[in-house]
Image (cartoon, rainbow, N blue to C red; front, side, top):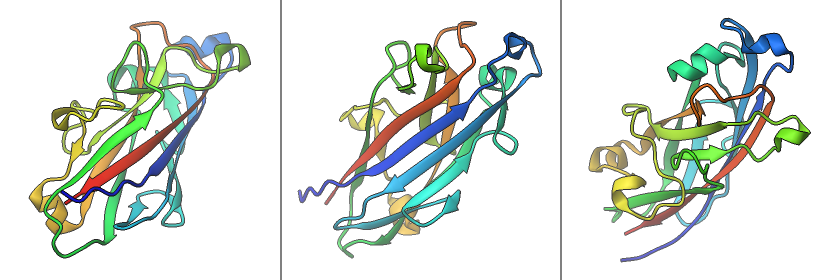
Length: 191
């Protein structure tokens, strides 16, 4: 097995309204999602947002606006793809581990790195999953093939895997309003 590792950095930035009335149903929350790619042996790129192939911003919600009820319903999300630009023709296996700061309440969630004391949203995280299976997000930092992104033969043949980033409440009825920042690194290996 030939193993090369490289990273795709993902940063989610959420601006949540700071007023007490933001907890009411129907209140808008601003959300931005940004991703960066560092290229290595297999050239990959990110598609779905605005920016270059290696530095994109994805808006989560309607024009970057997210409501608490949408977060609770699991509909505060943005679709994107990781696309193979060039890899060896002999490629038969491609796996990616999502690395980052894991939520203590939600093992599939990237925890908010902005502290509540500095205006960060508490009890919130971003999950990353296949767009076709948003209810089965990848477990952060897992090297277990059942819990990380293992590209199917069809995805390798199509040279892309459609993904979704979803803002989640990590503890029922506990999410607070505020900013959200998280970073994920996609660490790839192939054979």
